[in-house]
Length: 216
Ligand SMILES: [Mg+2]
Image 1 (cartoon, helix red, strand yellow):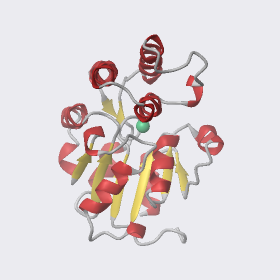
Image 2 (tube, protein in one colour; image 1 turned 90 degrees about the vertical axis):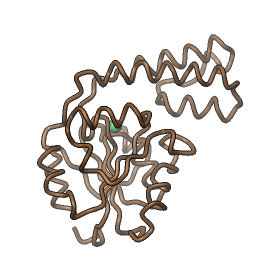
Image 3 (cartoon, protein in one colour; image 1 turned 90 degrees about the horizontal axis):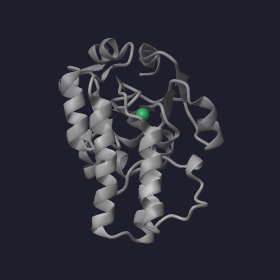
Image 4 (cartoon, protein in one colour; image 1 turned 180 degrees about the vertical axis):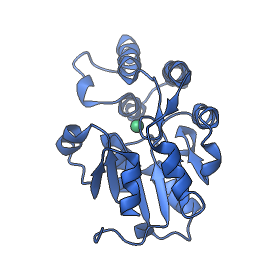
């Protein structure tokens, strides 16, 4: 593609980009929001539909939350993640794509999942060894849509220039975080409309992971 520079590094979102996890993100979000509401940290009128679990947690964190309540909310997230990772499989084309890219590009995972849950899922599905770095939420200052995970990865591989990275993800939060980290974003899967609503600029959209090879 003419508008993409020579790519040397690729940052992948994990859930529903490379892995087909069974994490019920909707229930996770509702349970976390309910927990914060019960504890008076979130008003009943909070626009839950416009948020993800991670943006709700970041919102409450900014307003000020005790360590104990924060940790309880994170525990709710981890429980959903662990359950959802049981029997996680690969997205179609993930294996072929990684085989084509490994050792030719710096490959990074940037996920809002806990590092441990992500490592386990990548291990179980047999793709962990393809990655040069895994950035989980403990390695970020704030979760996506904050760019901090992507910025941490950029900093880690300082020999790869800003415009030599590309990012791939299925959710608008991946797009927002990538844009704010100065990394061109390719959207994957079916969330096109929400991407548009959230003002996410993509350099391309792919429905099949192997199509990424056209852009690197
Ligand atoms: Mg995802």
